[in-house]
Length: 327
Image (cartoon, rainbow, N blue to C red; front, side, top):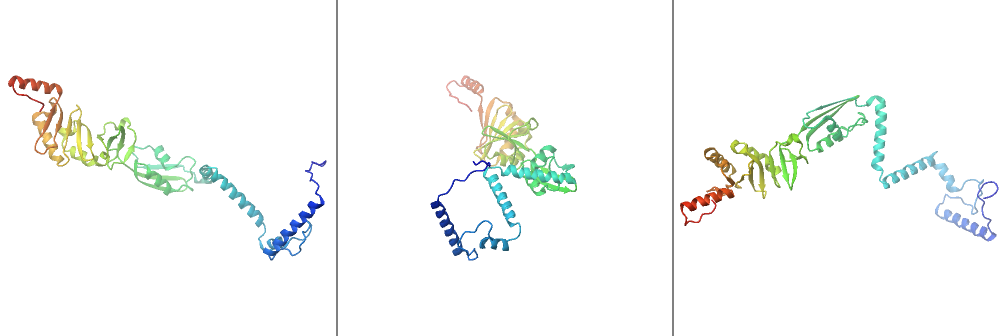
């Protein structure tokens, strides 16, 4: 550093100066070969000389302040590249969206009232959160189509309509899916609708009394089977769960633990037979653990261990030589 506070330049030898002049002369020769409009003199102009041919061409042909515009574009492109490469694009777009919403709100397009029609299970705050509408949203920049698609993507909502009423009113009409049953698979309990859509991956207390179906595929076949079962209240009222076995046929588990094995086909006839037996002979009140209706020409009853032992001893007393097993 020299005494004036500037970076001092190291002195060049005569040899270095000659090499530098030769290099500059070579650059000028190359410019004359490739750019016909470049400056013709071979020597390097001093700083106070007239501009070279290339610079003169750019000054004459390009609009004023084009250099400033190019610089700004370069800065914007560099900033954009940094945002994308750094993984900040989403945050940048969110900040930009909030800025324009703030401007629109200050201009009188703030959402001052919201009307939501058709909701039963979802709260107003839940619907607005699903749709991406918050206290900073402005009606001017709110994308009604995007809000509608977000609402329809939620399993609780089957249809939605979004209307913007300027300057500050928002109206949302929805059609909710109704909770229909509980579905259990691999130990996971969910609330489902009639069409089998999973509404919730957990069960809140308000849904504990819904009918329970179990097994793979049970969620999509529950509506038809439960509608058939409802035609036989003698059975339906004491059923705890309907279990789909192998995605082919149903078993019933009653409240007292009794298992009923239904056939794959002609389920309605099997349920009718079972209902009549309980009405006439109080079948469900007997000491049995399972009823098998899979054979079309017979009904097989499995006794409990105590009942089977008591029956076996009673038959032995009646006929000691006869060996008796479970019925």
